Length: 197
Image 1 (cartoon, rainbow, N blue to C red):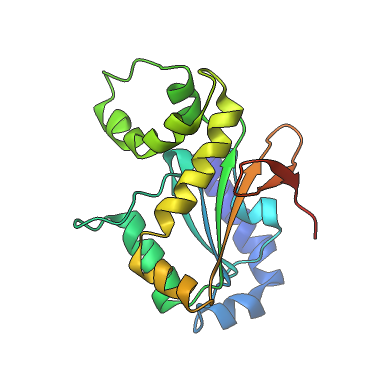
Image 2 (cartoon, rainbow, N blue to C red; image 1 turned 90 degrees about the vertical axis):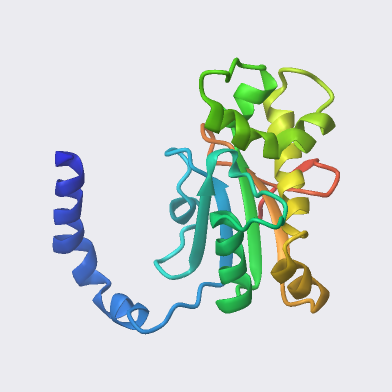
């Protein structure tokens, strides 16, 4: 906890004063351009990876960057997606997987999750990803297929389907490689290509 308190002190002393004007604007305005759906993994920091300022990304983080398909019982992910798309009017959605993902590793290597029922239940949202992965144990392939499957799940959400039909929203699939910093953009086939500006 001490590290966090020291971080807050540094933020208040060094960062906030340098960005005081930005925070003053953000106090009355919330208009991010992108919904970024990433993994809860502490090594994956969307704002750092994208070089974004506060207020530019609406971030949803879940274990395995999973997005449940739209269903009759709304959840926190569905509510966040709907808010970002229908209320805030984001124009882009990124689903970002990453190398060495613990959730995808557990699935690819068929870890025993019987003692962690909530995790096992949550990871069922990746069943389609597992079905598309040809080789058991191939974490990298599962990560790629999972990003594509979660993009497909997103299209089942009414706010997303509506915005796609109106051509006001674009979906993107990325995979971030932790040791190299590389970000690959996935084509619908699942083949990666390096992200270029």
